[in-house]
Amino acid sequence: MYIDILREAIQRNIEFVIESGLLDDKKIEKYAESNVHSVLHYCLIKINEIPVVPLPEYKIRLKNP
Image (cartoon, rainbow, N blue to C red):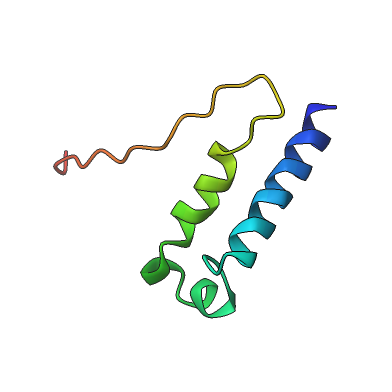
């Protein structure tokens, strides 16, 4: 049940960013330069159809052990 709702919500959010011009083939080809990971992460955070709390991802830079 939640998986279908989650999948549909993610799909709607991805369609929104495509229609808004935030994501297209050229940006996907240059994945790192276009920050595609952050755009897709945004699609996950914007889901509000299921009772979960989306948390943004934080990168912690550590020195080499």
